[in-house]
Image 1 (cartoon, rainbow, N blue to C red):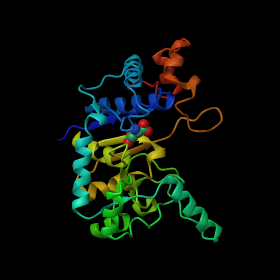
Image 2 (cartoon, rainbow, N blue to C red):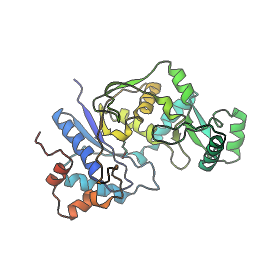
Image 3 (cartoon, protein in one colour):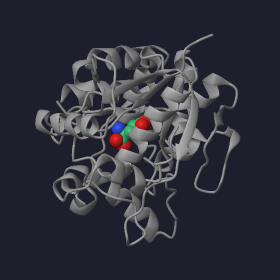
Image 4 (cartoon, protein in one colour):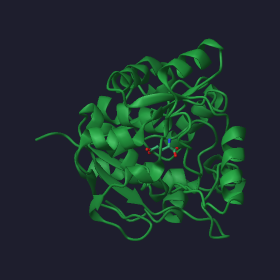
Length: 295
Ligand code: GLU
């Protein structure tokens, strides 16, 4: 029998809050209950916003909560070559292309379409889908633009990727999506359009790094917030394209603030360190996130 492997994968771009505490404690508990392993991964690909100090603060908060993880911790910024290798494979398969349009150009293009009365499609997070201009460029034009020194991002050619795969993708959901989706869930990667896989300043993307790492670390159970439910469609597609193993997924409810909105990293009063300073104990935190019942 394979040993279940769980992970908590925070980004070190801010302080942990109650939502992170819930996710970390839930993963830790499920791993223990299953007689499995618990790994910690630092998702710091955005090196302009992540810092070693924030990473240390994450360790302090988790330790204080009584969470134990295996060493070494995988820090994504130490492994950019792994994500590059994955991107190379997709490039060799002809499934990625360089996109040169700047954010401003995309905005202007979409505003123009909207002015003509064409509603522009949006992804599940509400961001406009990337226009097809760059995808349709001739190879010679791509070469010319790159030779001019124009910065570009690598994007997945979603339509070609889905066509190349030739079959739909789904996953086993043990938690639930925003509309109660559970059990065998049909993935809809096309809803995301041509997602970014790497940028000039960040040589990978969340989607690519999380997919590569979950496979490399042998993660069998991905337990994370419901805000990433729909993104799973992209992860499942990438797994299929690269022949990677498929974990089970458990998307848990999000901790909401007093205003009913998702907690953010700037929310001081729900920050773990702030609560600790105010005299809260780890048991108080467990109670606050609803995980205080004994195993
Ligand atoms: N790093 C992501 C975050 O902090 C979580 C990624 C995941 O669990 O797949 O929101």
